Amino acid sequence: MRVLLLTGRKAAPAVKRAAAEFDWAEVRVLPIDVAALMTTGFVLRHLRGEDLSRYDYVLLPGLFRGDVERLDRELGADFRLSSRDARDLPLVLRKMEEGFEPAKDRPACELLREEILREMGRRLREAEREIPEDRWVDVGPIRVARGCRPRVLSEIFADDRDPEEVAREAERRVRCGAEIVDLGFHEAEPGRVSEVVEEVRERVGKRAAVSVDAGDARLIEAGVEAGAQLILSAGPGLEEPINVAAEYEVPVVLIPRSRRIGPAIRELEDLVERCERAGVEYILDPLLDPPGEVLRSLRRAWEVARRFPDAPLFFGAGNVIELIDADSVGASALCAQLAVELEASIVFTPEASGKTVMSTLELAVASRMCYYAHRVGGYPKDLGVDLLVFKDKHVESSRSSGVPADRFVRDAPRDPRGSVVIDVNHERGVIVAEHVHRGEGGLRLESEDGLELGLALVSLGLVSRPEHAVYLGYELARAEERLRSRGRYVQEGGIERYDALMRELDRLREEER
Image (cartoon, rainbow, N blue to C red):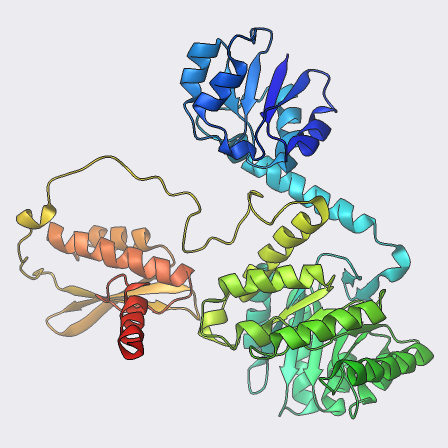
């Protein structure tokens, strides 16, 4: 097999490195900086007249948007699309050696998505093997070190909550990617703390570490004695947790009291010295402040990272994403990138409000994307995994058209079999559909699958009119989307993710005039 790879000047070094592993692959650098900007005419001008018949394939950049079949016809070669990003080329070429054939209409990285994810996981593991063994700190079954992929710590406020309820929530957080489950206590009694920690350890202790967070040293000790493996936090005026950490041989997070860089570093120096005298492992939290002080606190974090180059760092992303009224997806991704650039070892979120529910999952994905890009090179994009929850990166517009449907719509009479009231129960993770006939409630069905609910209603003979079935299908699909995205569902509320935002913007613009 002979393959020619076409690229531009900027990507040429990476493409040549990838091709160097394969004696059947050649590279042609065309006179353009960005390979993705190649056009059909550009390729024709620079390759016309050349004998390409000796190549089984000519690989175009994965982002090529020209006419591949025209290139085939006019240049007499078999043109295919490579990957969008040069980082994926080694895998693409290895798979071609095993028989994989790239396509003419889809980048190779799309066809090899599962393989790319496995390759990404492997390279994440390899990157962490470069960290010296003596820098690692054991937090139960989890290890952290400066320069590792940030581990996700997800906090659960456990005051006045049943231990079983807290354990169920801890299990959900771990499924979403939490590697440390932090239990926050403020008003609880020590006995209650012990019960909660024991229940959570029983439920998730083999898959994740458990930490305890309290401002009362008695509660911290009760949690650690019951099995917590990390203490949040010790600082000036609250140094007793260091003694607890020494007694139970668990690491402790250290925080400064001052927000000024110089005093904060001196306070951390004193705390670190005390930990080292007591033989206690520690993690430093420079404190990420809420919006309004974010840049200043990042400067402080940067200076702390420089002053303590080997200490694991704690990055409190929750202080930012909880205090801005925006969906947490983008904020989580940006915080993960900042954490990676600081070489933070732990990134924190509490999922304390509706807008930040699922931020554990968001940070778990984002931390891997950003860490991979930081260590391997490039940007956290086109990796085979993304955080595009509500939007798609590439949207294809159809050329088809039709007759306006409104001319055929008429008001439908009510279904004589009754109506259906639909609700979403986020706590239990189900959609509930209650059949109502002549004003009286009847059978209540539930499922996490909207289609399953609709089919059940039809099978039970509770829907007799096709218009009613169409309406229920529409509403059940909306309910399932809101269940998955943890959003509020209102029956007949319409789809207005951006409509309300546009109305509010219009009001603001009117006032600004």
